[in-house]
Each structure stands twice: as C-alpha cells, then as structure tokens.
Image (cartoon, rainbow, N blue to C red):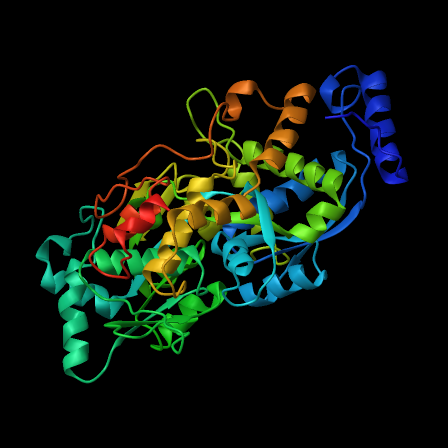
Length: 470
C-alpha cells in the first residue's frame, strides 16, 4: 500500500494539529497517531452514514465520537434511519455513503432478492446481540407445558419445545401465533426460524407468489421495526419477537415480556451486522473506503478493550453515548445491561454474558466468506432463493459481496501505525471458519459444504446432492 499524505485541507489540519500536540506535550498522543499516521489521498472526505437504533450500531457511533474517523481525515455525519428498507434504499441511491446493515442485506441486494444492486462489505460490525422474547402470557403457558421453566432461574438454553403445544392450540382455534422480526433478510428472521424449526415448528416458506413467507406456516412471522417491538408486543398484536438490543431488555424493564433465548445460544458467535456500501461507491472511493474501515476497526477494538481481569473497560461510556436521543435513545441502564456483559432474562434472572456483544475479538470484524454462505443457505432453506443452486454459486456470491482484501489493507496500515498487532488479524486464512456445531440443535456447519448443510435440516428446502460437486 502506497503511503500518501492527504492533500485535502481537513486531513492536513488534523495531521498538523496532532503533530503540534506531540511536539508541545511529549505525551498523551502516541507517536503513531501523528508522525507515523498514514493519511490516504481521500477521494471524498465528507460522508453520511446511516444506522438503525440498535446497540450494535456502536462501531459507527464510537468511530465518530472518539475521533477515529476524524484522525483518518474524515468528517462523518451519522444519521438514524426509520427502517432497514429505507436505509438500504438510501445507500443504493447515494443519499448515504454507507451504513450499518443487516448481514443479509448486501447478499440479498446483490442476488436480486428485493432491491437489486451490487452491495459489498469489507467489515463485520459485531457478533451475537439478539434475543427472542415472548409475552408474559406465552411464557406462563410455556411454564405450564414444561414445569422446569417455572423457576426464577430456569436452565438455559431454552428451546421452543414448550411452545409447540401452544402453537397447536392456536391452530385448533383457527388462529396462528404471531411473532415479529425486523426484516425478511435479517439475521433475526433466520434465527427465529431456526429456533422454531429446531423444535419441529414450521415457520413458513417463501415462494414466488408468497413474498411474506407464510406458506405452510404454523407460526406467522411479520416485520416490525426494532424500536416498535415492545409496544407492538404490549398491544397484543404479536406474541413474541426476535430483535437486537436494547429492545429485549426493554421488555423486561417494562414487565411486558420474557426473553427466552439469545442468538448466542441459537448460533454461537454468528455475525450480526456489517458495514455496507455499493460496489460503485467502493470503486470510486477506494482510499476513502480503506480509511473508513481503519476507523471502524479501531472502534471495535476500543469497544472490546478489557483490563487485566478481563473486565470491559469502555462499555459504560459507550452505553452513555448510545443512550443519547440522536443515537439509540433508550435508557442508559437498559442499554448498559447487555453492553457491559450481562443479560436479564427476567428481573429474577440476571446472567453474566460477556460475549453477548462482541465487536472485535474472535477476529469478528473480518469479513468471512463462510458467514455469507450461511446466510445464503438460509435464504435457500426458506425459499427466498427459489431455485436450486450449485455449491460453486454459494461460494462465488460470498466472494462477490465479502471483501477481505480491503479489510486486510486497512488492518495492515493500522499495524504499521501501531494500533493493531499481527496477532489481531487472521493470517493465512482462505476466508472460511472451521466447522462448528455451536447451534441450538447441534447440527454441524461447514461453510465449504453448503448443499450438505442445507440438506441436514428436517424442515425447509432440500436440493439434489449432486449440486455439492458443481
């Protein structure tokens, strides 16, 4: 990577100010933040990024509030979006330069499910972070079906088995249980479907004529914006939902529902959100893109920083920043729960969950091809991809969307500057994580074998085994 001192005036001011500060004080700023700072020739230095009011927008918010964008010569405006569709549309139209996105959004857009546009990601924002909450009435009925749940601190993980008789009762009465998720290609949609199907409850199929995904459904899933989940549950329009924080903890705080599981138990350490831009934007602004990824990596590392005892040292500050009205806008104490490594399933059931939100460790920020392949298998499993595809197609789509080369270029600059070490980025990887069975049903997932994985599930589409070798 060629070193350039940026020629734009804003970057020169930042560089000069940092250099003077070091010269005058001799401490307080690492040399790498000034004399050794690699400022790129930015194609664009004033940017607008979108986000949804969830705690996992934190890397973008922290990169702005802690000055990491500014140190790269970037002036960034961070703008809340009303829903995921509007957010994606604004990125595609150019109203936004990039955004906090659902992991499924760049993939779905690129293959043409919904809006068609080539969207890429060079940065995974976080792992985990979601929960599945049911209403108090449904929780009480689940406890009746499984007396082991009728305790202030039931054993976790909690499967959907105790929900199955409730689903059957609803159907017998000519109704269906209603549950919310945030978007058709969201992790939340696939997680709640996975949780239900693992217990033998059919969550419905998408077809060419059924874009709502309710064909053969025993439980009906519908889209609800994240901040509206608690109010929609309280109104009785849905009996449960899958959403990110702080909207599960909000249900506990308000006494209107019980989170029964988190996605850490549905699929441990699964990627959750990504930073997405159009390929066109990335091609036109390569240096700017690298500078953005540099700032986001630093923000993720700051969020996961711990002391010598393993305690997260910056999360309370992050929670206070996120609680501001222009960001998540929820109560600080509600946001603080999961952000500081704890989760309330009930007011009587507070548990340490240090990995509920992961923003840097486990090589989380690296854009893994195997993450993209998993989302594609779920799109095919539930019919959003309507026709069978060969294994090679899954791998090619993942490579069209996930851009580890851009990530590594940014990371290597941070290593040269002293902000990262070699050990903090994956080396020698082919982009596929090791095989894992860390799912609520214990089924193994090998990102290199999408057809075999798809066919291992009892509920959902299955494809001809011969496609595995094509």
